[in-house]
Image (cartoon, rainbow, N blue to C red; front, top):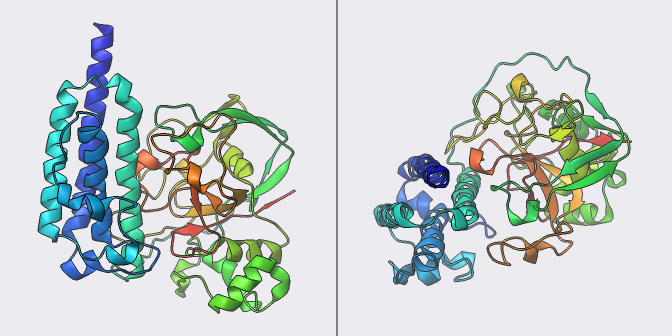
Amino acid sequence: MILELSKSSLKDYFIRGFQECRAQTLELLDSLDEETFRCLAHPDFSPVGWHLGHIAYTESLWLLERGANYKPMFPQYRKLYAADGLPKSERVQLPSIEETRYYLDAVREKVLDYLKVVDIEPQDRLWRFLLQHESQHCETACIVLKLINYQNPLPVVSTSPLTLSPEIKIRAGEFEMGSNSANALDNERAAHKVYLDTYFIDRYPITSRKYREFMESGGYQKAQYWSDAGWKWLQTEQIKQPLYWCDDGACENHPVMGVSYYEAEAYAKFVGKRLPTEAEWEKAARWDEQANCSRTYPWGEEQPTQEFCNCAATNIFQITPVNAYPKGQSAYGMYDALGNVWEWTNSWFDGYKEFEYYPYIGYSQVYFDNKHKVLKGSSWATRPASMRTSFRNWYYPYVRQIFAGFRCASD
């Protein structure tokens, strides 16, 4: 009886989770016109419509075809929506919005029927993966929408001055990094102990006001602040400010967003600091010295909501001041670790010691190439299913299009 209740509760969890996630996906879909739906805003990012169709394709592939042994429901879409099917430049010839909505609905109806009869426990991890998969592709869709300036203007959110000490001291010692939870993706596993010497880390992400000082001091023109790779990149790109730069005085306490790793690295050198390692960022965000344990979220174990952080927006571009969510701070007093903007770290993306790929080698392992830097946290567009202090994002250091900022550290 206890086992059956557990299975029933697990199925209820997935029904709620998939329905809540899909409601946000459809809200995004309903906000689009056909031109925006198909627009290739950047050569490195597929159109919004492709991401939405890919969600249905992946759900059908893993749950219906490989799980329930069904025949493909829409075989005509296989090449179009498979991750390795077509180059991004050829993903603009898409079904209409109406057809895509039908595709999403038809697959989801079969998935929920399958959920009623499947032995869910052996597939628990797969269902959690697919819930996060939808969340992640919708965040990427928000990036594409921002690139084509589809979002509304940045809303002004009033805030108090940043009066707390700007740095936090993290004392030397071990902490538990990574996660063995059911939600943990392959690259988060396994949980392991890491020892760090004493260090300091910024309480807040770097704000537009702070970053303006770098710009006005000629930071983009002075090679001494840049690594060799960063300076070479800068000479090619010829940029003078972050991609999503807000020149409005009302944005002064908002985090700077749309910076590459190279820009973050240069700013850190400008102020005599450095970027934190992934482990340093994670310890400051999740370790509770008093309880001698790692937290799932900076504030504890309660699910992310707008009470704790700026998250789960759909198609509205909205960053908030870095001190807008005092209830979301970590045990050390670190603000804005989750939500608002992703944060660059000075660590290359690689597997932990006991790494085993799941559900396929191409999800994480192919990126263990010493070419991708780890980003921690999440952004205003991240949904709760993909928010936790152990979560790892990764991008090439030259990418500026993502919703990324940073904070600094020092010894």
